[in-house]
Length: 292
Image (cartoon, rainbow, N blue to C red; front, side):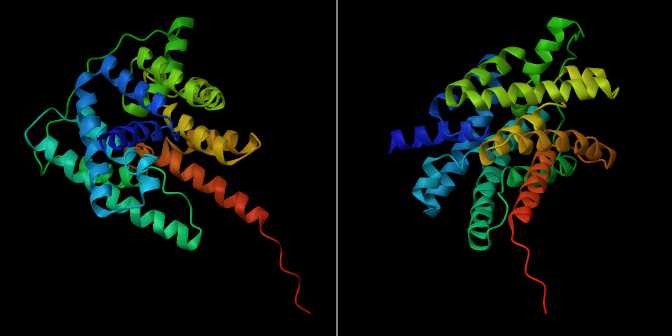
């Protein structure tokens, strides 16, 4: 049981990057340990809570072992740890929302299987994350303020920004964490590592070309959604047009959320993938013969 739980937890960490690889999951935890040990605790708490709820509810063992009931809870733990200062309420919120994410994901998976719907991806994380960020006032949560990093747009700074675009999936701005994550993806699938690096570079290049805030671009904030879209669509499509389209769509969608006063989280990634998948499914459907 302990071995199954640990493997499911590691797979849940790797599923953040749409991989099923305990080695990749271990490097996700190493990236957190090296960059932010406090966030590591929140991630483990969220991942364990969502996993234990799935086990307690008797959800399919194959899905649980694959880590499908771990990654949303892990991301919620990271979100709370990254955005709010510690308080006695914070662990309770991690446990509660992580458990709810498993319940929500289970219903979304059943709906997708029953009706052939679109993948849920990180939708439970986004919905519950938006709720948490909107309730910080009533819950009296204090926002944490990260120290400003010194950023340079030279060659070394641009290379670091590409790594940060991968690390920002975990709310990290440390290039070393990005390098750990890229290594984890390389161990899982070299194509995934190539897509992640290319997508982060594309986000950085477009942001600088369009004149978007340079500090945000160098922190990798325009890269992480593109990374996730490339990983998701690179798995489900044989030809590169789909991940390339997904990368472009995430970069076009991401600025819309701050304009609406809503943090993007991973919503641009979800919407971009849904648009690509829906269009490809529509293109594959046979045209009905004309009525005579």
